[in-house]
Length: 443
Ligand code: AMP
Image 1 (cartoon, protein in one colour):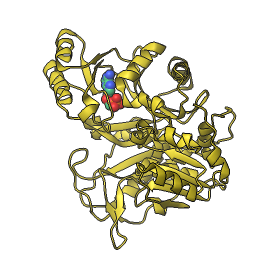
Image 2 (spheres, helix red, strand yellow):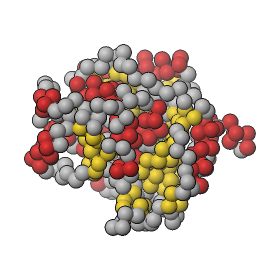
Image 3 (cartoon, protein in one colour):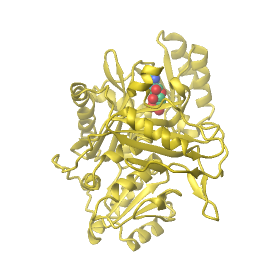
């Protein structure tokens, strides 16, 4: 597909930017983007109640499914760059549509988003490129799954093939539990996302996230991160969208990162090229550091949440140029972006009951918080008719801080959390436990 970006060229460079999405990730992207002097306005569709507390930001309503209205509105707003946050619009081909209309878009087309929206396709992709990953079986029926589950001697994990909001992975403790997980997926727990199931060898090791901004041919890496997916302290309890994160991940030494680049990142980009996929966006590599080396657990076609909130404060005002260059296919590798030498951490405050059922609509009280190198990005909030801030999601707020070391980062973050309250507020006290020296000493 040829990309001419003609429409975006009509509008002043980077003056008006549009971000699609409504979470902490999109608010943190908006916050990082608005730092640049060229940027006059950042519109979020639909954004959330936190959006308008961010300098230059405004929420707007557009029906993304009404394509004529969408293009008209983008022209009215003179949008020169569009950043698509979540995976669903990417999987539905929104980036392809907008590019065809001549807009500059950060976010892969439907073909590239397949890395995330089909786990079996991603596994076959890795097999083609000889990228290290857990052994797998793609299965189309419960009978097929049953045969593998009861004949294989290694422990397995079970995954719905399609998008399932981070809930489609089961880590069973027995063969029967494994069978029941596969059964629940084939019985429609995730709708058509579960028409195909991936059974995977269970592997062990710490997990890290690596982000590559890609312009179709070249890439540049952002700081690494580690997140905490489990609901409860000591990394126990059900998987969630993410309860907190820290960046960079000290477990990845420069040498080890080089190994990951050679064995995983470059082969991924080469394979995308081989398959004629012009990937213009971020590739998220979810990796496990096993005894036999790094292995890919999953690819995402967008920034991770809460890793994005954690990393964005480390970017300087030139970050937006990276997004723009990726959208235009012209990364040079010598972009003048300065990445802070501080470290960053994020703790997520959730509604009681998350990731299962929870109630929303509770008033959020924010007292006197430390603002120096600290941010609060709203993840799921809304405003009442009287303008009161209310909870409006499972994950409600992202509390983010930066400092010289992780002890100082999390001391500030937890101090700020003491000033925040809403009915049923829950957060983990041990985010970043691996990198907090004081925490390790006390526990
Ligand atoms: P995913 O949605 O694919 O990232 O999986 C969610 C979580 O499940 C990961 O962060 C891992 O903790 C775990 N997981 C996924 N695949 C495997 C695997 N093959 N072996 C062990 N744990 C896994």
